[in-house]
Image (cartoon, rainbow, N blue to C red; front, side, top):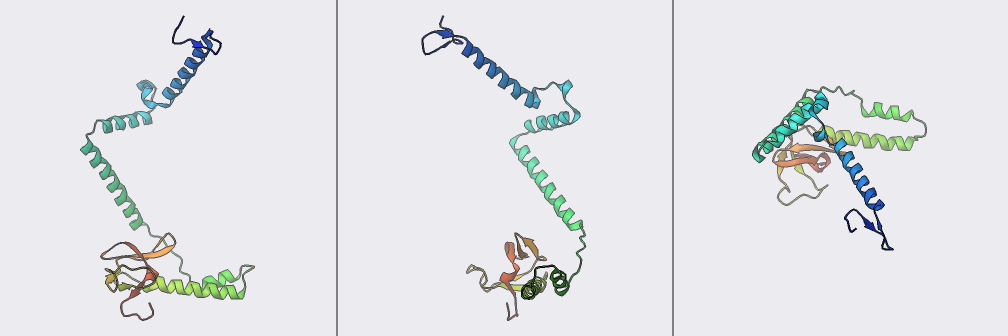
Length: 194
């Protein structure tokens, strides 16, 4: 009477109900897994989209490691170039608004006093001056606002891009320096204020 599907309870009696319950739970779990797995579905019951996905998956599974790496790299490069071209082709018209016009619009809001408006005006004008001061082709050096490595101290760089916002900081690309560098951490060569 010692069968694998029988369960012996604490009193020594054999009981088949626990074994049956475990088998039923196991069967239900396997059934749920099969329903969620597309590969277990019959060809005649797949939709056109599922068939297309299945064909691509089979094609990719048959690739060698080298073919797979080339395929993924090509897809990444294609996505990168498409994104670059979309950004290049996008002509965003930015409404031109001077600092004073902007501050005048803000000053009409309730709850903002004259002292706060003066501070906002000064901050905005200073920020706009920093952004406008660097253009592509300008020669700059890294100032002491940020920590500068010994190799880059006093070294002049050429600005290679327009300023852009990176995590709340305006940065530019510099020739000979990887990544962007904060605009306020640069001074034009020949400027004494920087």
